[in-house]
Image (tube, rainbow, N blue to C red; front, side, top):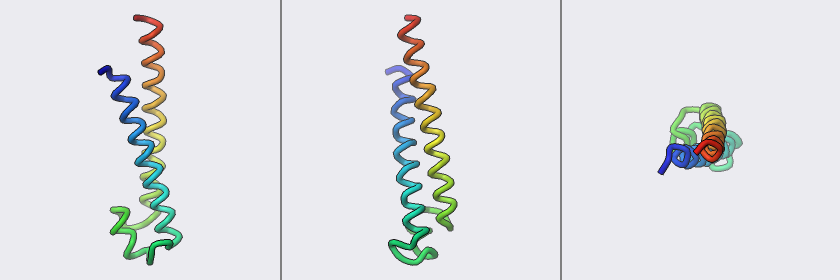
Length: 81
């Protein structure tokens, strides 16, 4: 398995985790599950929902960058065997 494939898998996982973390941050921020001070540490692993949203967006950006690098690597591998 080449590094490009591993990078694609890691990019997809980072993107999924980022989206889920951001959604959960907004769910806790809008108090859909209960009070923020109780639900934040329980479901997010951080003290505030803003930290979880920031971390989720960071994972999304990292996943997109890794996916772009993996696509470039696979195109270059096909162009120069």
